[in-house]
Length: 330
View 1: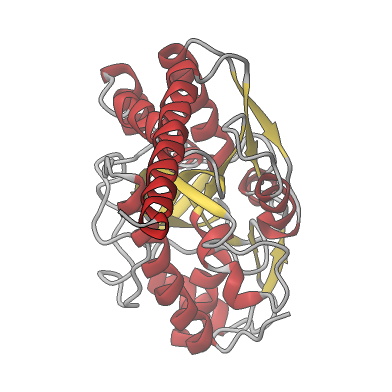
View 2: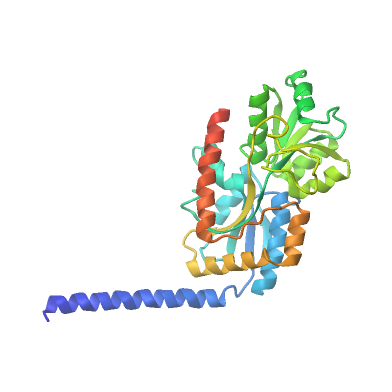
């Protein structure tokens, strides 16, 4: 055997040993993870749908993984502030992002210079739920159906206002799509979260909103707001008389979801352990019942790779909607 051949074999052996050592270290890290509290950065204000679901999942993960999972609300700039904070965290699994779909898949089409890249800067962990948003109006608005709302708004151009949880949020885009289809002129009032938006809708400061079902169905059932339609593909059991947007005569279907993500370069074994813990929680009857109460009828249990594919597909779909509506990047 020549000296060169021996050297090559030696280098290959060394490389294989290094890879084996790295794999062993990764598995050892995953076996001991977590050994201290974990923070979930939530890029919205407290009390909204994202915060509600984040706290439910944080509690379930804490019980499964035997460490506290602490919610850290960082609202602002349509989810950008909290998302950027999570993207820059040390990739060790101890600071994660719990977010809503629009912050990850719509913002890239709305902002020319995002401080983070949803694909490059994050390792998707698990998708939590999937569903539409409700089109709500204040209870004293003299309309009872979507067609009546459209007629009422058309007769009062630029007199009605609607709120959302930020420029480019799912609620914003859904209403802009309706406005374009129906030829409406309404004023958009963006908030830092869905909670404050719904509170001002309850107080009559704004007239309408698309809002997440998880925090609004009980409000509707109590008669404090009126639901005219939902943006999902089917009616929901808790509000069986509320039609879909398509059924109500204005074809429009969007899914909202929540998701857990880690900073890029987080050890794959840690990502996998978190994914398994989330999917275990989504099989827990107590968690499932609570999610059903929050009107999550679709609870996909997927792998990190499947969630990554969902994110990339939704970026394309929402990007097409942003272009169709005619919103220009800021």
